[in-house]
Length: 90
Image 1 (cartoon, rainbow, N blue to C red):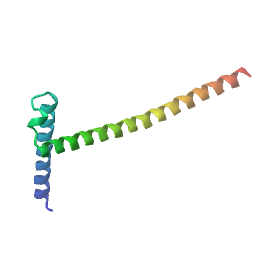
Image 2: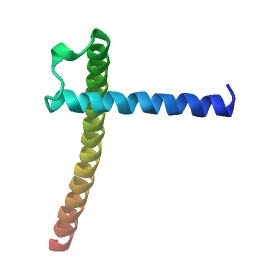
Image 3: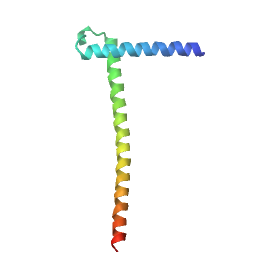
Image 4: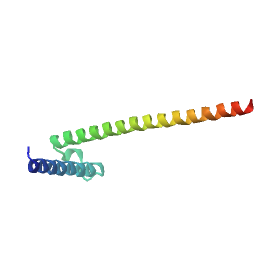
């Protein structure tokens, strides 16, 4: 695949994604009802929602990992403070 084909394919994919996001917005704000959607559009929206949920799940896991790391750092810092206080009181 040459560079022009890649750019064309990427542009087409971005246009399709934007079109689907606009459809999602119209569906969510009630401009379009479920009955007005084709079977293909319903499938596309379902896939979009599933992808968005999976992305949110991944972000939540990342944040939990980050939070646990920070908690460990705080606990280590707190333990060092306790150790210093114990050493200084002897």
